[in-house]
Image (tube, rainbow, N blue to C red; front, side, top):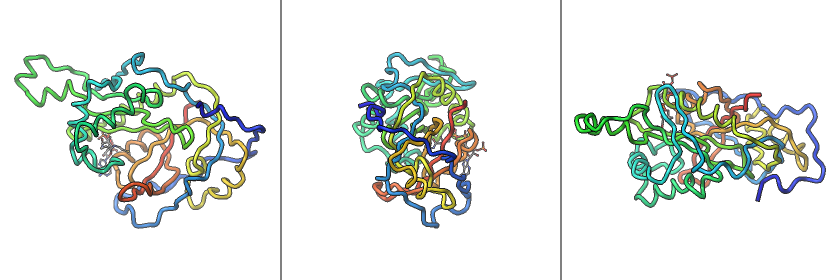
Length: 286
Ligand SMILES: CC(C)(COP(=O)(O)OP(=O)(O)OC[C@H]1O[C@@H](n2cnc3c(N)ncnc32)[C@H](O)[C@@H]1OP(=O)(O)O)[C@@H](O)C(=O)NCCC(=O)NCCS
């Protein structure tokens, strides 16, 4: 069901209410998880009037590749399963994922891919990351594994959850350890977002967890604003969010470089062990 199908009878805007809470403190490079993190009850829902790309999203088969200065972004297709199994069986890569450990077998990697290939593509828009330069057959023979990197997917990036009914569309990314620290994630994220903002969209009213609307900053208007917003609709400009483990400093730095603002910190209580995270968002340019 489209999230905007059930419109409230009366739409009211919270007048003079600025739904952007104060920014949280930037992640420290020395301390991470010692302070208790505020937890907003996930059941608390707020109706938000905003815009979103039309649902369902354009089918995978119709999606075009993107290009940055050094890299290519191609739709994630089923034939890339071996590449992703290779990436997702590396402990260093998986340590910051929600799963927290390598995939046990190909079936587990397939389950992850199912979110992105049809019919999962209706609610996700993800790209495989590839190097721009394809190796020649001679280079592949001479350079072996090194050249193979150039034809393999070396990571992924895109909208991994639309979150209609929970929060904002969520951007996710990961690059194989062999290719970290070259500015790739930053370069790619700028391109993916430019594309995402260009998709045709519609006005919608979606219900969201209060923490994705008011944030969790202690000096913010969090709980009170959620009370005020009960039964009415809050107008908010569209944005995307990204959620990272509080210890994932490279990822938090990528978000910072691209212009994201931290707005909430909380714990995914259902994860084993419970995972403290920071949520950041970036507004769609006017
Ligand atoms: C997060 C990730 C995608 C970053 O990719 P990348 O291509 O190396 O990122 P970039 O090179 O564009 O930027 C990384 C930034 O983090 C910084 N950084 C790296 N390690 C750091 C650390 N331990 N502490 C603080 N900053 C760090 C880099 O110096 C760089 O910032 P700078 O340009 O100001 O110097 C990559 O580390 C990754 O795939 N990790 C595993 C999967 C993952 O965690 N995904 C994100 C889930 S939210």
